[in-house]
Image (tube, rainbow, N blue to C red):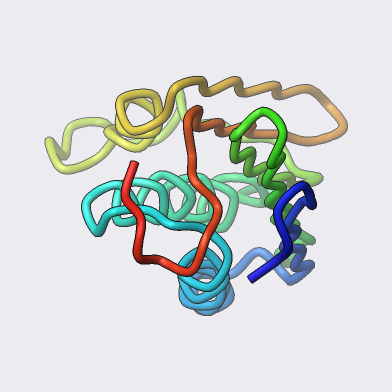
Length: 147
């Protein structure tokens, strides 16, 4: 737990692969429960939104590349504003529009991220994709308070 008035940070850089996305999800979930006081439902929503961004980076960023490249996760909690921001970046090009959407279980990640956050911004260009996920009115504490 960080002291009041300070910010909390989480940063991981890994190869964009499903097993690494799963590992980051576990580590991020642990960091979240250690540094912020979220009720179980909201904590689950935050972790799910971050997981969707990680999964998209692992699955889509390097589809045309000979090997997976890098993905990075950065989480920042601004105590003064009570805002949690999580950014997932990669250096690949998402080609979601070209994937097989005939499977009804596919194509729900971006709408899900938008539904679970207060703000979701996705910036994709030739240099890579950046997903910004943000939640307002987040309490910092030891997990005993709820928002």
